[in-house]
Length: 359
Image 1: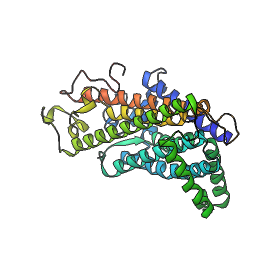
Image 2 (image 1 turned 30 degrees about the horizontal axis):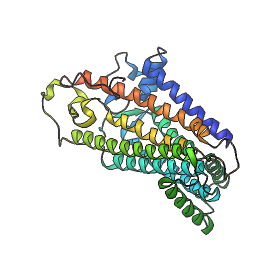
Image 3 (image 1 turned 90 degrees about the vertical axis):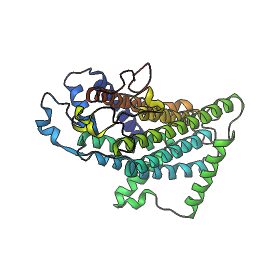
Image 4 (image 1 turned 180 degrees about the horizontal axis):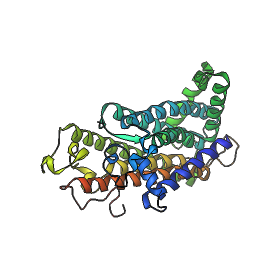
């Protein structure tokens, strides 16, 4: 499990570094390749003056609609991690670092389930939209690494062990087996610990309880606000694509290619930034990380008797992930913002890409 955690952390560090290199164009040639790999949807069209599309590596693409696969992987894989996390909650008693990690996994499960619903039933994927197969594979790995990052090391070790067992036995059924009454009762008991933890100072006392309560309550609130706003803006973008609220303030002939299928998004955070849905995603991830990191204040590792399971250890796991999410979405937001300005003559020039005054 230690080796697995190193692999996951290594992925986040590489993902963060490559996102920054691509966004800031730090390494000519490599930066261009990374930006090409990151292209998807409307950003995939008409931005290749050097003729890179004629190169063989660029031809290996998949439909943009395959984005839904990411959320299928996320829902299923996080469900496995969450199941083991709830069992660890019961076996570790009321240790806040263990229960807090399970709460963080629960929040992510709700988030990725919503994204699966939106991708399948709300979003309108442009028929000709493509994404590079390398970007697609990175997305799949991303949604494998997030659950392992949020899960407590005890639960992550159980997940890795179940994967190894399934591999040896040749059946994915062993990811959860043996599912017997004892494990189901333990998972149910763990769920009660999570609910109690979310609404009380269970397992914490003194100043640590106040600090932990602030992080958990603030994190859950940030997660809620981020999810609510992201859903709102995804629906708004889908309505523009579907034509329900398309604003005809310029003639369609003034736009070319994919730009004809899009309107200018307005309302809410759209009045300040081009990609409020990305800002909302950074916010909700920050909330989840606050829950995971702050939950152990005052009592981390007491019930388990194992050191290193408090806030510092949680921060070491989740900070690289949060930084990677921010860097990747910054790259996507900047490219989307530039696309709007380049293809839509009527697009508001005073908007920022993702964060007003910063990006």
